[in-house]
Image 1 (cartoon, rainbow, N blue to C red):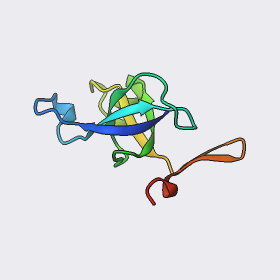
Image 2: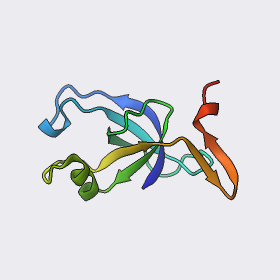
Image 3: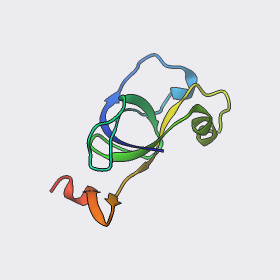
Image 4: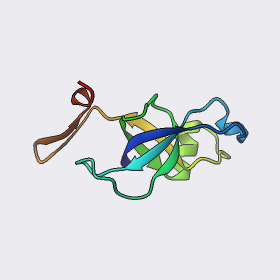
Length: 101
């Protein structure tokens, strides 16, 4: 799993059938302290996430296909959870309640 921040949404009027009625999000992998790491990617949202949310993503096709219950789905990256907080070494690095006060 990868920790990421939702930085946008993706709209595509022409899609393969497995993507119909699905939300696509633009995801930036981050370190626990919020620093951007890795390459931004597009993922299918299964956690009702929104722009600004920290999320957990799977970036492996077989896992995504299992979640979708479709062995032929052309999906690699999928959002599986919205993160409430991140703590490392006893220090809270992120808390969603402090995001928008």
